[in-house]
Amino acid sequence: MYYKILKESGSSFSTLKRALENILEIEISPEVYYELGNLLYYNRQYDECLDVCSKILKFYRRGEIIQKTRQLYAKAKKYKLEEEEKKRKDLRERKEKEGLAEGMVILPRELWPLKRFVGMEDLKRQVLYIYQRIKLEEERKKIIGINSTLKEGHHFVITGNPGTGKTSVAKALAEVFANMGLTKENKLVVAERKNLVGQYIGLTEKNTREKIEEAIGGVLFIDEACNLYREESPRDFGKEAIDVLIKEMEDRRNSLMVIMAGYKTEMEFLLNSNHGFRSRINTIINFPDYDNEELLEIFKKMCKDFDMIIDDKGLEALEKHLENLPSRNKKGFGNGREIRNIFEKFVEAQNNRIGKMLEDNMELPKEELMKITVEDILAIASS
Image (cartoon, rainbow, N blue to C red; front, top):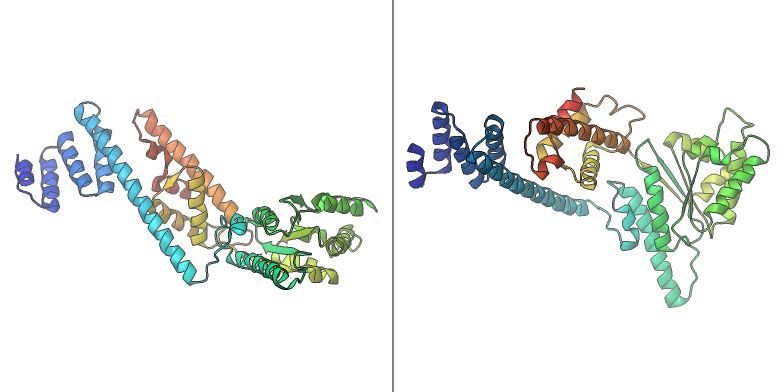
């Protein structure tokens, strides 16, 4: 009665909230809890509303008020998610504006396969530079009839630690190069030492030439190319593969692009192993380790790809978890690969949490089945 009078008198939100909380100290009932939840909902206090509704559903099982509470819970959840999405969208737009002010690269349509990579602004900038040069050469040809030689012989070296996306970037570059007209088709042929270096004289040259022939018209990607050179083994057949590559990179420059990837220091040894290497390489790009902000962006992208949701509190807990990872500042940190492993562990923790809730016959809205919570993150962090 006291609350009803206050409500009809048009009292403020804080007065009504305090009145309901005082009543709950005297008489705990689902109806009073519901009124409090409803009040919080209409004042856009969605987190508190969901907390109150959860208490009702946890401690009370029957009655009309349970059905009304479930409906209120679903509405509060819906609007909470919409608000969070709006905040994320506003944050993204603000970051994009800030990024443009700081020199974020705007990519033309032909280069869009690179857009999905977090960070890597140096890579995008260098590829954009090649694209702009090609466009300029095409204009020159139209206007003054000068033929361009830019589309011949563009080879890359990509360096970086594990999980920095070297292989994924090579796949995207193969598509980009085809879009730009640098290659005839979107084709990536992947090779590593075991595909090129043979066990006896003559086999290495045969294997290497076969891989090159397979890649003609597209891109030959040599993963962990630094393994081709073994300084401690002067008779190693890897040197033969290097010699064939250097010759073919020059002779086939109008029909083949080569991308070599590996650790930064080891790739320096490879490039220094033969004077012809550096003269054949047009672009060398190092992928630094991802910082925490970039790792969080990768995690959010994984959530989106797998129809999962993580709220702001969850992201804060994840950031703390990343800062406290024992392997974070050690050589060999997995970067994007590490984030994928963490994501899979969080999903497993979420499955365990929701499984227990379903065992208690709790009815959960669709959004709850998609959400990664602080509880899931702490479960992994403490394991």
